[in-house]
Image 1 (cartoon, rainbow, N blue to C red):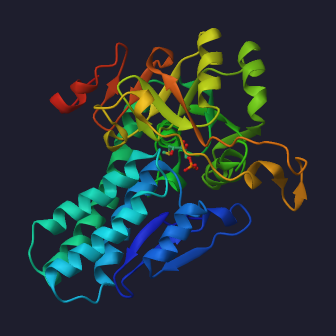
Image 2 (image 1 turned 135 degrees about the vertical axis):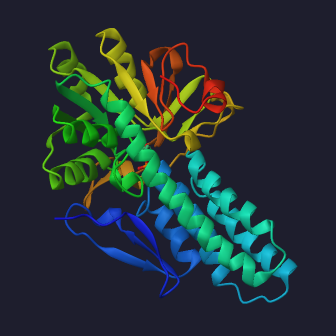
Length: 347
Ligand code: MRU
């Protein structure tokens, strides 16, 4: 089956179309999203998720806010769009791409002093954000494939694939590119408690492409490393500060284990995920509701009244990272983030 792009702008009905990821792997459902409030709900519920996809969704969200705004006075119009953008940008605080995508489109709109022209440019700019995301993933894939042996087993955590982007993926983009080049790559996908992005989404999208994937529980990874069954780890990122990589909770645990077993630990992410002005301590880690932990299907698995913590992300210090694969090239330790902004290509 050909999987459609995870998100796109529908010109005829001036709305966003996206895959509802909460329905996978049972149903491939496309949602037509016509209001910003529906988009807010989709991001809160993780129908739309994954850092690069959040960037594109934020960009399309601003375009949607613009085209659906009835105000004819420019100051009132732009104030209304900014208000909606503010609501959108606050939903998921750890993934920097959401804000980045929103700000890209707002900045383009603010160059113009007319409602009609702003609406047009909002759509054009949001579409460019989506197109660039596709190109970034392809480029990350091409650079990253050079790091993989011809025959290998790769561990990944959460979903940093086509579903977390417009298509192709970052970590899974590296795997797709390697397979396309004839490498024999097997994937171990950690189920990723509590929302099971690895079990539900990574395994679904890789098996759609005929890529060899096996789901394991998160807690199996360390022992499989010890047994020599994992050649490298590749994950995505939600934000990369000067000192740390933020990604799905559990990533740090895999990095520590990989380091202990001398296994390369790679991060694949577009430059829009970098936050070079910040350090780990300045970043808010999203905490989500207790019900994600206390229930499994319709069953309660934690007694009422028992305390629960549900951190959605963790941070892995740079010294545990063997390389960061970007669309401009591969950063190796010591990671010099400024190099990204100085050179066209790095290796
Ligand atoms: O809570 P999620 O599902 O949005 O978390 C997603 C991740 O942690 C991904 O690994 C990350 O966004 C990178 S996606 C290319």
